Amino acid sequence: MTDTQKTATLSFDDTTVELPILSPSEGPDVIDIRKLYAQANVFTYDPGFTSTASCDSAITYIDGGKGELLHRGYPIDQLAEKSHYLEVCYLLLNGELPTAAELEEFENIVTRHTMIHEQMVNLFRGFRRDAHPMAIMNGVVGAMSAFYHDSTDITDPRQREIAAFRMIAKMPTIAAMAYKYTIGQPFVYPRNDLDYASNFLRMCFAVPAEDYEVNPILSRAMDRIFTLHADHEQNASTSTVRLASSSGANPFACIAAGIACLWGPAHGGANQACLEMLREIGTVDRIPEYIARAKDKNDPFRLMGFGHRVYKNFDPRAKVMKQSADEVLDLLGVEDNPVLQVAKELEKAALADPYFSEKKLFPNVDFYSGIILEAMGFPTSMFTPIFALSRTVGWISQWKEMISDPALKIGRPRQLYVGDSFRDYVDVENR
Image 1 (cartoon, rainbow, N blue to C red):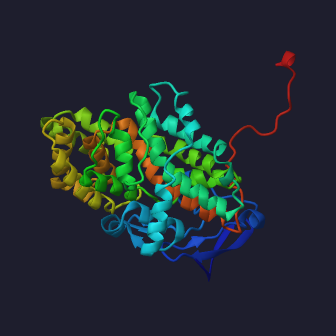
Image 2: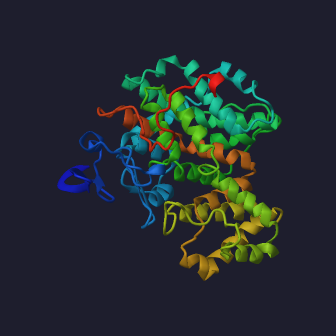
């Protein structure tokens, strides 16, 4: 980021202030209002922070108009096609793609830290059997600070690195154990001879009576889901992690805060909402009815999994995810699953309809990831935990970047107060 010589002039009443304009490496210029309150005694008002940059970052860049997502400058479609999740993790954490030796070392470290402290198993048994897996993950991740005291000092770069390794390595184990607990099956421990995605699938679907043979097509699809959800700039959960970490909270608490935010249906529940919509449609013959309803402005029904708040053109992650969805459905078939039958036909109908193409309502990453996870046998309650697992590296990368910033300040948003003005207290007998 460079500071240009340009300024913006703000005038109101008898006050005029000159505000610096900062130019990023990508994206629109940014008006620096950090000294606005001191100079002019006013705040800005921006609910949802849709026009406010809360930080500077070198990790992820999104151009919604172009349908572009870059991690450290590399386009997401290239990373998803040519790379794999742990290599993308290294890139996000360190800023550069690893050499072969660096990647091997990183993979070995992650693989050999997938076990969780055995006493943490007791935490799972404290939850009700019908607890949502996200509730379990939120509690267990937050409790990691009680088990890994040697990686909670955020002022120590080495401890920050250890905490990052631990969370990336252990999150699949925690997510899989949360799943196993909710379906009443024994926990399956990780194996060091399997890759990251294959290990997760085995921990979810193996049972003591027989092992789970991981199909490479399913493993690759799972890895792509992880990769395509690894980071997405300053979204709600990432901003939550940054705000929590600005107070100096330990990294496990900060990531638990991110999980809590992601659990909200407006953020992490999009692929679950998509599957629920497909179940509501029910059968292929009802698709025209729901297409018509989606076009009707007076009908509250909306096609879930189509279009995106950020991407005004197409979701760059969707193309790769569609390829994986096609491969998984070809492998597993859709004949016995009406939800997947509806999904395939709905995709065809929407893509062939000019109404959706003109409004750029293309299937997004959530549509295809939901189809893949449904085909693999995951219940919808596991969709958001898998999202949290994937996004952990993004949260950690943003956390590390923020903690390393010498200009770090505790987050303290301002407000537009609309309550009562000063009032004197009235004794209860006089009210």
